[in-house]
Image (cartoon, rainbow, N blue to C red; front, side, top):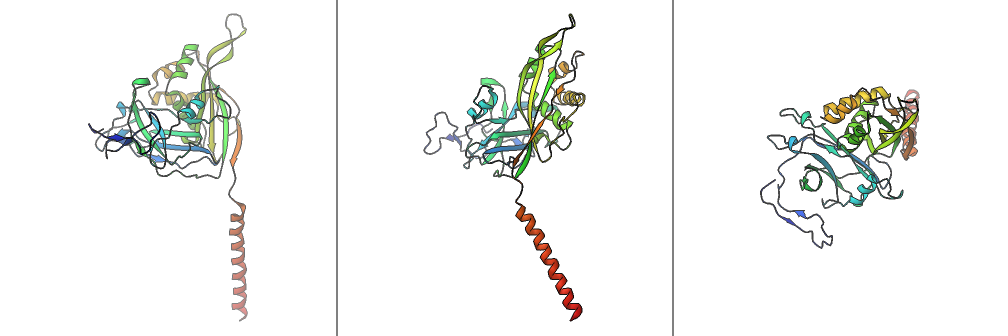
Length: 338
């Protein structure tokens, strides 16, 4: 950023601790590379699914991915001001929130300095998504970089901004599934549940395990350390174990995957590969232990969202074609017998 910037409260502002307007032109001197946003892929009114692919943070002369801890996807209103979504995100993360609560899932995306080559934009390095209840007044989305974690974290006040977001699908299939990861011990399962990189790794593993599904089609709705019955070596009895990680996910796409969407062994291979590529050392070590068994992959359920395109448009096109055929036939008859 520039050393000196100016900000001001919006005119008529009545929101305590709201975000001020950044009034200095060019205050933020870097942005993510090669960013592209989808439209709103969710076909249902009041719901949203937006995905953005982008490369590392940088300037015209160099990249700064190593200075980034993570990226955030921020909804903006029609005045390019951030929309407050704290309660919606909290509801998505809180299993005790009422079933009717507005929920908004935003994939936490960690930096990936190891995936950036010298002088290479790598525009598909990251995918970040927003899924759930549509924030009131949503007009655009913005990708911003964050450095640090917790209360000491610092976030750039501005970032790459999309064009106006509009609906792009009238109908999609929503697939809901679950996969349970089995670790060597409870400590490894807890560490994986707490790791900021885990959700991204799971998305990559699912996308690489199912044909015709992309990272932007997948949302991880829950990652919890769970309990599963395991066979005890001492007495042959089955005892409760906390060495598992229960993952719940949704896929929104035009084609639904099979009832059992991927094989356990293949998914584990893909998860290990993603962990290695993203530099998730602790998870790579945990998954490589001899006591780790293949995941338990549950069958999925699929629902159709939205409505298909109007049949009338299809019929009209064919009616026009039939009419044109009749006219052509009549003209040919007239020419022949004239």
